[in-house]
Amino acid sequence: MTDISAAHDAAVTNRARLAGSAYNGERDLAARQSLYQWQSPRYDLPSIVAGRLGAVRGRVVDVGCGNGKFIKQLRQERPDLKLLGLDIAPGILGDVPGAVAVADVARLPLAPGSVDAALAMHMLYHAPDIPQAVRELSRVVADDGLLIASTNSDSDKAELDELWVRAAGDVLGTGRGPARISLSARFTLEKAPTFLGEQFGRVETTELPGTITVTDPEPVVAHMASYQAWADQHDVPFEATIERAHTILEEHIARRGAFEIHCLGGILVCCR
Ligand SMILES: C[S@@+](CC[C@H](N)C(=O)[O-])C[C@H]1O[C@@H](n2cnc3c(N)ncnc32)[C@H](O)[C@@H]1O
Image (cartoon, rainbow, N blue to C red; front, top):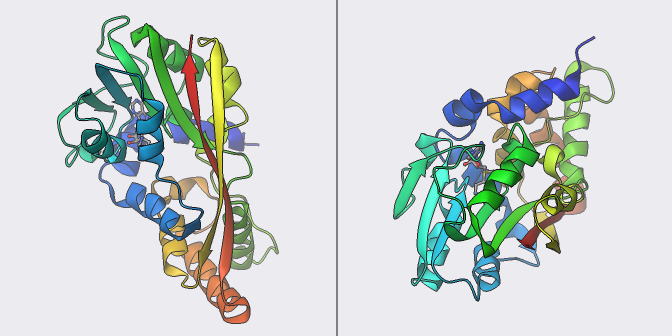
């Protein structure tokens, strides 16, 4: 029997899949980010990070910077900082302003203690060896510097997981279908303090709970479809499952007026 979770872990961390497909442009990441515009309360995560960087001066590296959401905001709010964006996927760096380079969190092209803060936002779950990635981030952060990481809870968007299982079951004719892939499962908000605590004496977690309410299936369907780089990991036809989920959502919204998704993300501020 195949070990599904080992196969999922390998797929979530595979460099060729990440750089060549999942993040070879910003479309899929942007679809996931944009669902939060229907969340209440709304959190401006880049501004929250800018606030947490309050006393930090000098050089800040954003590792796994993606489409530059954090760098763009920091350039506005903290023009005094010297920012560097690093990402494993060259294709996602196109619109990131300022200094950027292709680099892997496993081996950062930075001298020991050379940055005053590092960001690792929603990215450590993609690292094949998370303890090693945290050691590498710790290596480049100055002794009095900060690491700010973010991720999602185990319980985040449970309604989407349930919707997938129902839709996949309908497609397969099995009642309930197989679970969809979970990107953050390897480094959830619950697991993160233990990983980060290996290198940092103080890890302060701030939970950011909210509820997404949509009256149109489209943004939810776009979010689900944004996992297409992992379509082959689902043991169910991916497009057909998305189509079925669309219909289930339409029926739910027609009956109840809206579809709700409970979110729990958070940030972790780490120092020595
Ligand atoms: C979910 S996105 C998050 C992007 C951005 N930090 C944000 O929060 O909007 C994960 C990013 O991490 C990058 N990534 C994945 N594995 C990486 C690695 N080993 N080293 C550096 N970047 C990596 C991906 O290419 C992608 O851009």
